[in-house]
Length: 316
Image (cartoon, rainbow, N blue to C red):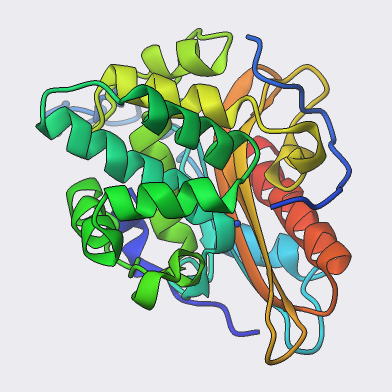
């Protein structure tokens, strides 16, 4: 697999599948000063002060590509990943971040975001029926509920309009009502996660509180909308707590959404996972997309291994 040279990191800013949950529980909970250019030179015979050690620049994209080498499968499978820390400082990393993949059910987060934007524009709260659909769609990955809300947002045109607002530049809604065939990139999914979880996490202990505590969140979603989406993603059904959650430590609270889709033409699987995880008290946003997997189990194993490797690049 060829690594995509991502000069677009600045623009940076998949439901019942039984898997193994690792370290994830349901929702519970100075700028550097340059040396003055006018400093006087040392006098004759005076030892010159040694220059401070320069920080070694780490290319995290290269480090991620290296970390993924043992995990990349042979054959038809492809994988893409984007990861960032919610500390407002640590550089993120991407691998094939602008390659397009079908969303499968991870698009349900996007559908809910689009619904909330429409409600905000209308100055209203979600109806009780919309909330029923949203809960089933996110927590249980219910397809009928997703279809109902897809229609409520205006279908493909509505999703594309919402994504323009949210800054998703590489995502195109599925045509003909096929919302699961929406095309997206790992970079765009990280942008969507930022719209929900913000850009810097301080001290929230639960999904909703974490969204409220996001600092510097440049999101068109209101604080209440972000907390609502985060809360639902933190209460994913127990049989769906796999994927990026594998990167979390044993004490973390995860918020995620997974997607899986067998392709009728090839028999191969799309397996995707996006969300927020916590390692040693720090939170990270991770999006992993894959397709061409021989089985769903192989796809889940690939996504989980890639998620672990991606977070380790930022923590190591």
